[in-house]
Image 1 (spheres, rainbow, N blue to C red):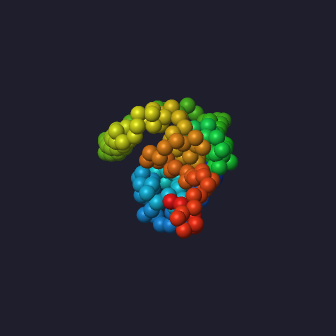
Image 2: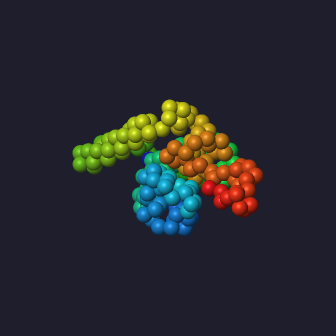
Image 3: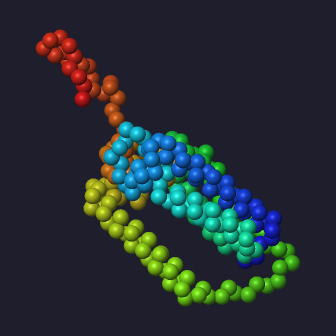
Length: 231
């Protein structure tokens, strides 16, 4: 659908703001984990270095960053950018809304900001059509090459996600597997949200909180009268 130039500029600005927000979180995670390799390992599910901190982002965030950048470029270059703006806004709403259910969410302000920007994208795509625009013909079918490429990429992504879910279902207890789909307390919260306070175990993707010194109880003096070291 055709949108006016002011609507295209507005959509590009909203996408730039979303991309900047995601980039800031990714840079923060790089500062916490130390290197891009460690961040990539964390996104891949390797959480064996909890002493450095934990990532607030997920593998979806660099994908969103690339999508926002591509949508901003499309809005600046093409008057037919309404579909791209609507798709970016819808994806943001779908991926950020679940984070609002995480109690004590330290990234709540970011989630609310991104949801507001996503709503702005949808509104821009809906009302940005020229008032005197003629009836637009139905879009043509995509060419065979791009259509096949997109289908292969989507099928590969679906296969990888399915294999990952099967692997986690076999590696985690049944309760944790169910909680991953029902929002239970034994798993980590969605992207840009800290782990729920009620996490009871440490499956992949859920970093256990170290016990406080008081939880060990009073120290028992050793044979020489000194307190043994606590493990």
